[in-house]
Length: 442
Image (cartoon, rainbow, N blue to C red):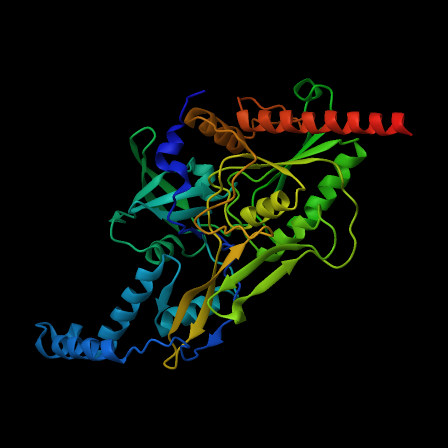
């Protein structure tokens, strides 16, 4: 295996700009704040000294700018608001009345997307992870691909929001992306068809080959995202594996970009006691302080050891699950530091029908670890080379991992999975020895 994956050259040390948007039916799970009325600032600092400067500049542009049709008061003020919000972080955004109405309508209906998670990375529109079975995934897009053009239009000056708008559209419409693949220096056009992104979130429910696990019964479940039925589907998958005598579980969250916050909390509830704090938010005001806990009703006790696979493309909801299970000593994390997307966006309406999408809080794990821009670090670090990651993607796309529906038999080298198996074997051996000593003592 290469000492340093080419993927790490694209995403070094997880010092990421945490800007990502999911182009399918799901957004990152954190856009869950209700539309609120604007309220005056509680900041003691007065803005009026600088308002005079702004008003003077506005007046000068209005009076002196050569193209009068570009210098209307509303145009200038809206431009200033767009710039102000864009400078805060990639998730904050000013929405004109038409854009705000479109966003409200969009939340009530389905739209066509490409099923890819994108971010701005070093000035490039970069794919974090194609959503499995989405148009981008089926076309062969990979994590780290840079979107150079959209339908022939260069992306070098696009904001993240502008790119999202261009990539979304009516179901069935075709779109051409010009992709630069830094790992291979390949430039290629991909023609994709927009689709409603509805894909199963629980996949590869298997028992690993006992040849691979040293005779132990270790189950494997992969979550591709977090949607409404994910927790219930996971429960059924675990029931199935438990009936087969599962002694330990590997939960694969690699390349999982997130989904619904409530779903991520419910997934934690499969492994944690009722009413356990999973994640909480902190912001500038007490109004955004919230705790998210597992359900109050008891669930089936699942006390076998768990290993969670994570990597640089495990984001948002995946980080909430991984962080909670790590901090509460319920699972061992194997892989790489996660993406680092853990901020809350509130939508605040303005008097003229426009609105602000404003970052108002950040997510923290039960152990008070900040997720945003930091990610969740694994207990056991394990990396993959570019070739290993590309092979894994091809296998998942082409269905080569298990065409006959039997035991999970990887057709490629997966060092992260191997390390997770080793960790579970060690935990099971330790548990057996502890039981033996207890029996002897009695």
